[in-house]
Picture 1: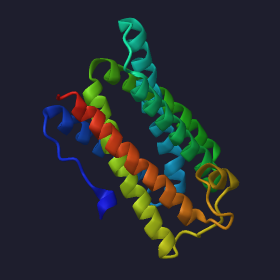
Picture 2: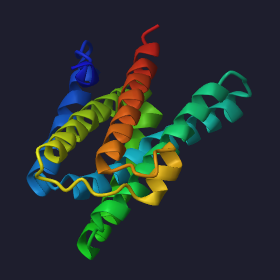
Picture 3: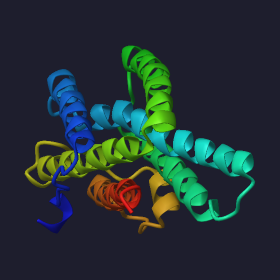
Length: 202
């Protein structure tokens, strides 16, 4: 399937990024299993961090270096962060996270923000590759979520208004339409971050 394309690791840092991502995937699979809506709430919290961290650091780099040319990358990264935030807001409406999951979100965000900031400052190529692999896993997870809906194991409930407004969906849109829209976003982020990582090789 075209949506499930995979970047083959080339450098050692690529393999490190992929291994880290698979470790995160194992945690998500173990903790959430097939509770894809609840999985999305926690993982979209993590997904909203890299774009903001990278956009902020790239902005500061431009200020320190007093050079132009950083604008397109900054805008792309901040738009990615905002997009992931809207994914979170949407799945909060769908999954209705409990108090434990809300606390898990706070803890996960605090840990991952600091971790990713350090990685991005010292190893920006690896940081973008990690995000690229994260997004590959996100595309896979949303594909599995879609399968659960199509096979009737997850109710295809009406799409929340926030999703209809954000993605300009039809008023009769359902969860299935939302998952497809989110998966398309994640595929775009995957390709963008893998490209940002590869740009460091030039």
